[in-house]
Image (cartoon, rainbow over all chains, first blue to last red):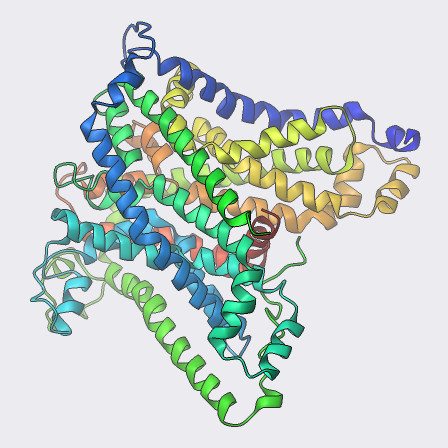
Length: 292
Length: 298
């Protein structure tokens, strides 16, 4: 102990970690506390403000546009969550076989995630155009539509298109997490079940999925939180429209704060969002850990 | 953690040798089918995007016409170079992404050293405090951050954006670097200390080779996060000269630079795509090592 303290003086340890602590304090913790304060004022972006107590929170109940954005976010989350898990799981099953080309496939599956939703959304802007876009060309070639669909100006169609784009774009993340989890499953488990003549699906159901429960929980949490915080793909592809039809929560808060310049009210909504996101991670952890 | 690489065999099961014969054949056929399907679904759209970026605006916006569809030109890229807005944004994005990677790695490495190798009162609390910020979605503290950065004269500033991005990437980086330092054997560091090396020298000469994979993981994540980030840049930058590439492209798309040129949009998106693809393919093992660390130890 004393020798370790000589070579590793505690004061040096403190000095080493302080810059990181300072950053986190200044750019996360202080804003967090500041947010609570702002949410109790009528702060406009420019000009004087006045303390209003809990009035911003009371107003949330009557804010029908906010509740529509909550409903829309829940709908979007409900649409994409399961497909992301299933597609990611199937990708993991394909690459874990470790045959020729598995490494290449793993790279390919993950590329869209690395490229990022902002860039993927810009590419989709072109391909969603009526007549000229690839989405319409493909559907017309397959005889499904006449190729003139204006995807981005119709709420339900835009939601479908964005959901497909997101499932395609982010399933690779689930795949990598599940693949890492699958590495930890002892081979003997599969060998004995293979001797019992169990089918592929039996093995997945009895061995892989139970063994991966924690990893599956983690990927579900990440994907649900990602959906709750969705912004970029909606801002780029529909700007929330037509009307407010495709406006998720973060986009609504952004518009309240930086377009309508109602910073106080927007921050109260942000606080609600922080609490909801916190509850989601807590609830999912609890649900999926119960049986351990 | 750097030992978990993608290149390793994933699962040792599913050896077909003892079960060769018909069952093995079916598995191979299924695998080939899945592989081909995957290539079509995941590679074709990206190759298509490259192809599109070489089509002029009027071809991109017209219904497919075999007479002009394959007339590829560098027109869009030349246009971007001449037009200025997007080219400038590419430069801004590079500055911000490189700055974020350097700053995040520096902060995470020193903190990782402190947390991984030193004992001091409050170490556990301080580490928890940094990790807990992972759960605070930055999307939800944009308003106080905006007011605060404004008061610090850090809005409309690439430096401000770098400080913000570095903070967002810090919890993950500190986690990765603490794991990297904790994996270094005590004896190695002791030996250096006994030979009279100070803290800085121990860090740079003795520990560096062992922690470089962790640093690469941290830097890669920070770079890619900063390069593709949209909401923060959109909020904190209001001057056109300072826009990063995604913000510049959304302005292009919404017509802020005059009539929308889909050729430029397509080429700009491809420019945004290229560093991600190159860095990921080249440094994939560091990327996946980071993900695996997060997933398994979560």
